[in-house]
Length: 74
Image 1: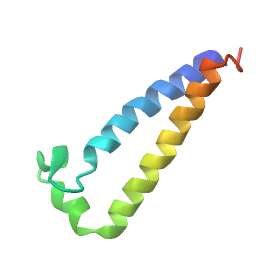
Image 2: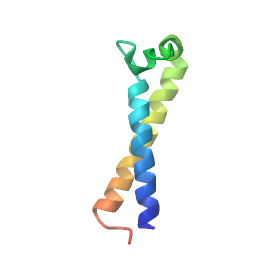
Image 3: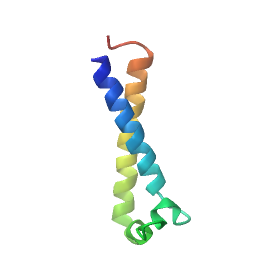
Image 4: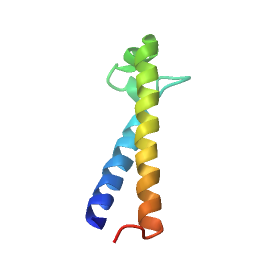
């Protein structure tokens, strides 16, 4: 069970890094590299979806951190 929680935490951490780098509230950010900056800046619904997905992944990461930190799963 601990191995599964570790795997979920590592995957959520990597996905969280990618999602945060895709955010571009004031500039192009890393999304401007491939010319994809207009995808998220021009569509408000896509930005809302990106914000929601980032929040969900962050919550999964925090829950995994607490489970592993307090030793609830063994």
